[in-house]
Image (cartoon, rainbow, N blue to C red):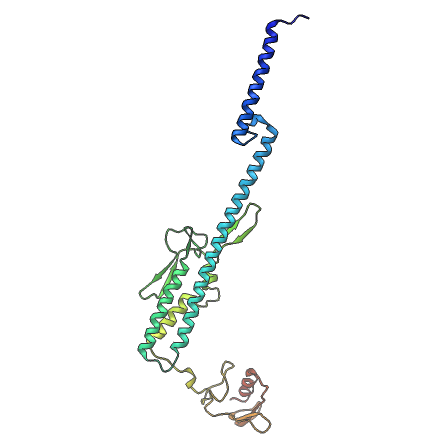
Amino acid sequence: MRIATSTIFDNQTNAIDNLTFQQNQLGNDISSGKSLNEPSDNPTQIAQDLSLHTSIADQNNAATNIGQAVNKLSSTDGALANLTNALQSARQLAVQGATETLTVSQRQAISGQVDQLLTQAIGVANTNYAGQYIFAGTSTLPSAPVVPQGSPTSSVGFTGNLETQNQVFQNGQSFALTTTLQQAFNFQAADGSPDAFSVLQNLRDTLAKGTVTDQSATSVNQKGTVISPATTLGAATLATTLTPDASGNYSISINGQPPNGPAANVLVTFLPTDTMAQVVAKINAFTA
């Protein structure tokens, strides 16, 4: 078989072109530090490489979300710690204000400190993290959700909702990043109990009056009254001190009527082991 001279030269030229291409590709690999620069270099390897890049991107995104969640939890924890400190300070001021030796002006000065704690509590309720108020629930608000009403503050308005802010991850897991205003401040409690703002307001106003009423000064065993289970019996609250007999029992004489009997002075005896409910039952059993 006869081969044309041009065919031989063409084959040699193609071989040189292939070597030149390989040389250029090796040069690119060395200069870039990458063995794959185009999908056509190795389609199978490129597919694996793209899958790995996607996995890395997902992991980075998850790490970013976790970091943001940790920061928000830290912000919530810090806010709750500040609220706890404010309430503890208010309790100390309440104990201080109850001291009988204080003057009216001194109690009013303490009232001013409580008012500052109320302002601090409102500031805590408006804690903001990354442009979102952590106690506003899932509401997106342009301004603070807790707004004081009156001067001095007599109530607060709330423009958020009572839902928790949750974080959902790619694996479907979800957990709460914040607590609600109701949970943290007892706001709009289901049982009607006062919230933290009302408690501070009441304490401030009570101290501002400057006077203290001794509720324990009123006798409980007055004529015509019936002692209730809420009443505390003892030497400190009874007009007549009870003295135990030789066996350790306490007895009192009351003007009552035994069951199925005429009205008379009845001696009622109490045991040291009697509960308040048993004491009240014994008294009421012989009360007209």
